[in-house]
Amino acid sequence: MADRRILLVHAHPDDETIGNGVTMAKYAAEGAQVTLVTCTRGEEGEVLVPELAHLAADRDDTLGDHREKEMAAAMAELGVTDHRWLGGVGRYRDSGMIGTPANDRPECFWRADLCEAADHLVAVIREVRPQVLVTYDEFGGYGHPDHIQAHRVATYAQFLAGAPSYRRDLGEAWSIPKVYWGAMPESMMREGLRRLRDMGETAFEGMDPDGELPRTFVPDELISARIDGNHHVERKLAAMRAHATQIAVDGPFFALSNNLGNQVWGTECYRLVYGRPGPADPATGQENDLFAGVA
Image 1 (cartoon, one colour):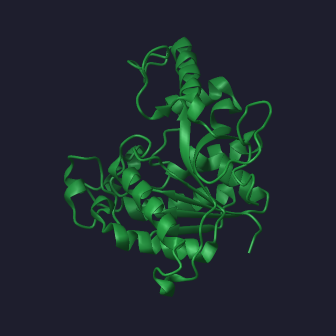
Image 2: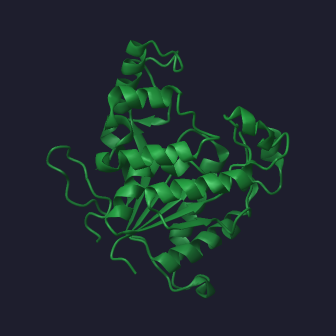
C-alpha cells in the first residue's frame, strides 16, 4: 500500500478531469495511490460530437457505454490506475437535471437509497484507507442533483467507514484524516471573465466580472489549499480531450486556457472541511499539499 492515498468521489465521467485533473496527475506521478470513484456513467449528457449524436439518451441510449471508454482513456492520460464505478458499472444511472424525465427514473442516482449507496463507498474507503477524501460541497458545485447526491454519499460514507461497530463485513474501520471540497475561488473566475471579455468571447455574457457571481464560485478566504500542477497541465488537457462527447476543445473554456496559458487549468483549489490543516505556503497562506500534516 502506498504511503499516500487519496480518494476522489465524482458524479459523472469528465467531472474528475475538469475539477481535479492536475491534482490526480501530480499525485499519481509522485507515486501516491489515487483512487477515483464515479457514481454514474453520465448517460444523460449532451453529445457534442455530431457523428455520435445517436448515442444520446433520447435515441440509442448508449452514451454510457461510450463514456466508459472515454473515462478509461482519460485515466490513462492522468496516470490513474484505480478507477471504480460506485456499486459496480451501471449500478446507478445519470439523473439529469431537476425537473427532467430522467430525474424521475427509479434507477437514477438522485433516487438511490443513501445508506445503500454509502455502503458501496464504505467498502472502498476501508479497503483503500485514504488519508484524503475529495468531493463536492453541499451544493454539488453547481446544483446538479447527481453532484449533490455524490456529496451526500461521500459525507455519510466517510462517517460510517470510521465507526468500528458498523458493518464489519465491509472491512476494518478507517477514519479519513482530511476531507476537502473542490472549489473555484471568485478571483480566478473574475480574472477569467475579464480575459474572455477582452477576447470578445460572449459565451459567459451576463456574468459581470465585477458583480455578483453564482454560488458555484466561493470567496477566496474560504480556500484552504491551492495545488500548483503546471507541470501536469498537458496531461489534464489531454484527459479533457479524451472526454470528447462532453468537452468541446474549441469552446470558450479552451479559449480561456489558450489565453491564460497554464494558469487556468494548472491550478486547482480546495476547501478543507474536516481535519487539521497542514503547514501553509508562506507565499499564499494556503496549503500546497493535500497530504500536509497526515502523510
